[in-house]
Length: 522
Image: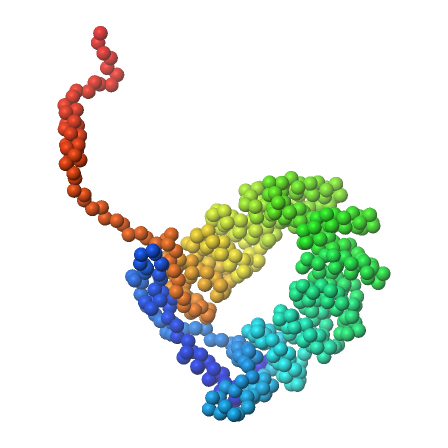
């Protein structure tokens, strides 16, 4: 994949990384130059007792791979404007993007992974991405376009809503672009809020771009429209092309799901009635969509009616002979957890076996989040252990653990969040910059400067690009100085009252007290 770099590229790599390493020498987040502070009405308080042992420049960092270095250099050229960088020769014309790429990257073989890294590092490159592709197409020895690599360019241009460039790319690569490019184009058009253009793309896909206009393509378009709230456009499209592609049960269930995503339960029930009268049979997924829509409406309008309305949909399922599955219980458990009925969700979770259903990874994750949200941390840890013992431990990735840590930090359980962070590393998940920033900020807000600084150094050692910042201690966690009680000089009335009280106690001490239970003699 990677050839020996040219001398120009080698010199550029050495100059780039030597300059970046020399210029970047930040101090730790809680050094003496950046102390933790909290602004009080009178004067700021700081934590002067903590002094870092090491500096950031002395800490080792993980070396970057060759692909990462090349991708970073490519992104700097793609984000670079067409200006002259040499101030000594202002009259000398600047190099264009193609000239710079020819100078430094002519001997590089570009794989889809390298292209994806480069595009992810260049989110604001704009039309430079299309110019970069034109340069690649002129070097067939370094780059051979296929469906996978073209998809990365389409997704990047679609995020910037540059659909004219996407059209130019598809026309230029007619016959090479395939199913992945078609799905990416439809998805980006629908995400950008252009359902009419997506339908027009489907109508002209065979003539303009050479895609096969078949039932699978119709299913992709209808699914994308329904997932993003354009169920009316999807239903009109299905009815218009019904002569060529008669809708089957899968398309009908997708349309029902689309109306439910929109939150229009009346339209969904109307469509269900039409489907049943037409002789089709709906499966469990369609009724799960109806159940989810009903629960979301109840959460918004009247959460106390959620269980009653959900029971009505479950009765409809029983009458129609539709069995419940794991998705049905996931819908109920998720909506119960969102209205903070964690105990009811746990009871339903324990009763799943009565209907022959077993929980999946989504069930365990939803319940764990709800238990942490309710500050039931030990039960949340037990649910994670139960999830692993059931065989769904692989579903606990970096994103799931970050969600748990974020919830615990939100309810100010930072110590337990650090325990979950330790468990995350034991399970083989590498924490990212968001996880480190969240924990460092929370530890600093709680006034735990030593632990925050240690976590910062650990992130730097692991190659995470965290930057030192000045954090403020939350006033709720600042230790208030103890006020010394000053002896007040007694006034003469206070002194006389104290003496009288003492004399009265002394007089009463000589009085013989009656024994308990002794009766008076008559």
